[in-house]
Amino acid sequence: MTLALALAIYLPVIASARGWIGVAVPSGVSVLAIFTPAVVAIVLHVYDNGIGGLRTAFRPLTAWRFGLRWWIVVLGLAPAMLGVSYAAYLSLGGAFEPAPALAQLDGPLGLAIVPIALLVTLVLALGEELGWRGYLLPLLQTRFGAAAASLVLGICWFAWHIPLQFVPGDANSGFPLALWGLSIVATAFVFTWLFNNTGGSVLAVTVFHGLFNTLGPFIALHPSVTGNPLSVYVLVGVNLTFAIAILAVYGTKSFTRAQKTGIVSTGGR
Image 1: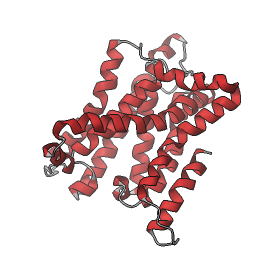
Image 2 (image 1 turned 45 degrees about the vertical axis):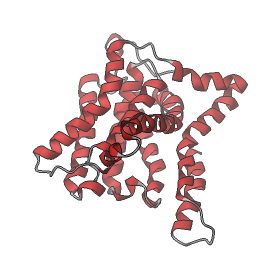
Image 3 (image 1 turned 180 degrees about the horizontal axis):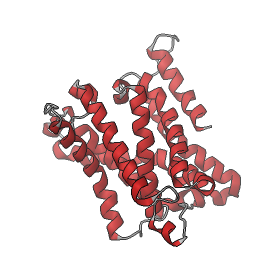
Image 4 (image 1 turned 180 degrees about the vertical axis):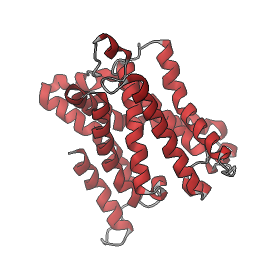
């Protein structure tokens, strides 16, 4: 349902850009598709629980009491992953390239653009996370466990992203499709790990998602910036390494220490 709704938004944009239809559809319309996971999740919650489903849908967004240690992880993981990726890229012979986004810091808004960008990406991330982690992930984990649920969700998440490859001007259009899919699926394991260890907090994964998307443009690792395929392999490799590390340390059942005592967290809503 989410993919169908997203395609209903993406297809007119793509068709207009390629001249398949005579109506001009601004590429900015595609932003609306980002909110389709949240819209579908809210509709399903209300369908299952009536108007009380609204409270069920948004409750995980208020879950912020998961301890200082995990707040440090939530806030520090995105910079750490991006930093490791960039360090690996440089150590493997990649050339330093100033990120185009850094030039915006010298503009009229200066450093103010960073919190503005973060606010925007947090809102956009929420459009995804209310659906993917807030609704679908707990549902999948009750049946399959953390690893299999992450794999299934990751594939769905990737399928939902594919139309962006054909949206004019989208940053992801320059990323090789197969490697991009592998990266997204690997990252889904990291999101599940965060979600389960913060007690099923949509707030936690939204903040992580928003930080990752905010900081990414300030680190020149995208192939459209570097022009070097090495950057693609580094990004994918680091995401895979984090996913494999989670599996190695926590196993496949819940990605939490709880599984060692027989308590399995499914990240309930």
